Image (cartoon, rainbow, N blue to C red; front, top):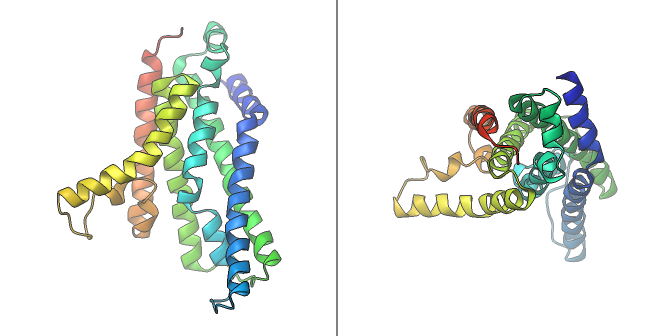
Length: 242
């Protein structure tokens, strides 16, 4: 299994979509921060002094990662099927369960690198726009933990969807549709059922989970991760290799 793990990590760092998605995530966050600062300066609108904690949380927000994660995860998770190497992997004695687990682990490594890169890059941008560097406080650290777990939850969900669809085109479409439609559908259900703000179905959607209290947000993220892994293993075992 160690050889398979190294193989999947090798594929990760060869995948162009990994570098493209990470670059776009960093670029968009930087552009939003810089443009917001420039706009406030040009219009002479007085705003609160930007600090490193505010910049950090804007860079690592799960909503900022969501759409680009669908592209990275869908393309990477279906790589072995798309390029025809899955049959060779299975022929070498590796089980479908091992393939899923090692691919999932490699995906988590990739997303963690994106998260850390966003973390570090936020400080650089904060300095560039003249923001104040301050120490991480307890509230910010708890949000960082929540955001990371929720991003892993998103990654797990899209990994499961990609496992079900197998093909890169189908996985990409399915993940994107889920990202765009799920929040709207859940919000519509809340409206139709006239649910109160204290308890709504939409708050359990993984991309919205970070808006909840810290403990609930982490639990929601962990539930998505556990379910995605269990169901993903079951489905991968039953998948036929074509």
